Image (cartoon, rainbow, N blue to C red; front, side):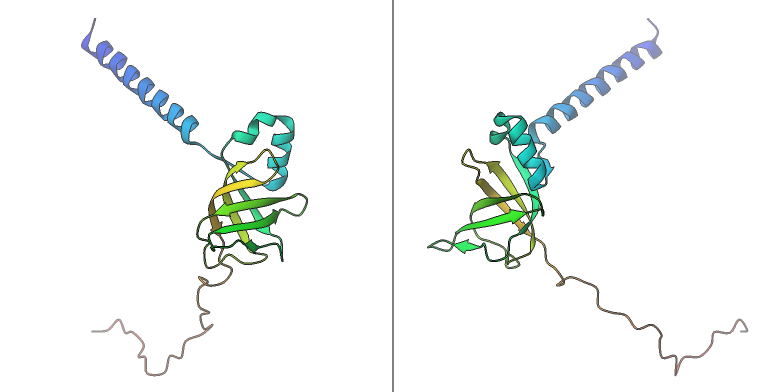
Length: 149
């Protein structure tokens, strides 16, 4: 066998193994990102999906946040406008977690219909927006550049 053929076969084997490792690691650690309606449809279609870890992007229903005794357990409802479900989160909530804020909750849907969240991310509405910039600059005191030396 020619050295070039051996090199190509060896390269193909290495690329094949690398591709297999990438695909298998994505399958093991990949998490679906769904809306509440999509999650409800998947659970309805396949009851075994209840145990699957997912992330859900939704909005907190105004007036639904209940902070349990001890301060590290929250019960609230989230919605995407067409489907609403309760979420139970145990942990420290972000400072921006309030009514009507967009959130991403990560966890599993319980058999009782309550989402058991292990992760809670809240969107900050305006805190990190850019400062307004003036439409024009006061050019007083600036000299025009000259190409003459």
